[in-house]
Image 1 (cartoon, rainbow, N blue to C red):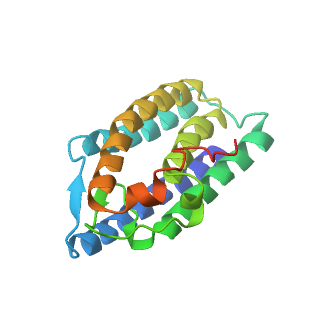
Image 2: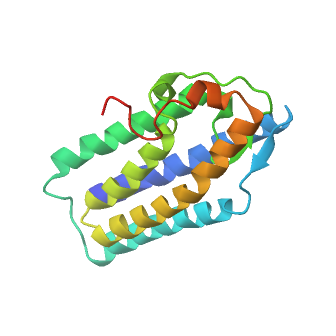
Image 3: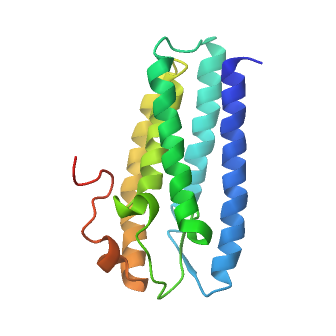
Length: 185
């Protein structure tokens, strides 16, 4: 197996395991009276991520792309994005999901990376979508899907924040925090 095939397999395994966690968490939240928001855009997020993986596979294998010469810079950034991602997932625990699912009147605590920014998981995903393809010279995939992800987040984040503001203490806990970068930057 090539380095790309190993890393791509790990990426697929990660996505599948996250979907399993999300489904388990969804059942748990629904049993507590949760509501699902943003149902109309969610299928587009799923398609975006599937097409990202297919595009990445196609671009790297079709052109026999090798590992980038700047892998020593890119790989730590990718690892950093994964640390942020799993820190966010662990911090939310049973409340983490790929969908916007809100348990009404739930007190939201500002912990983990959420102490610093409102959307660390989206930052991690954006970094991954931009950096992972660059690791294997898949520039078209990096550019196209970074752009598409940005558009999708421009739709999703306002829906998520509105639902959280209407049904939780979100505004009190998160209203002063920056969305993507800590205010010190």
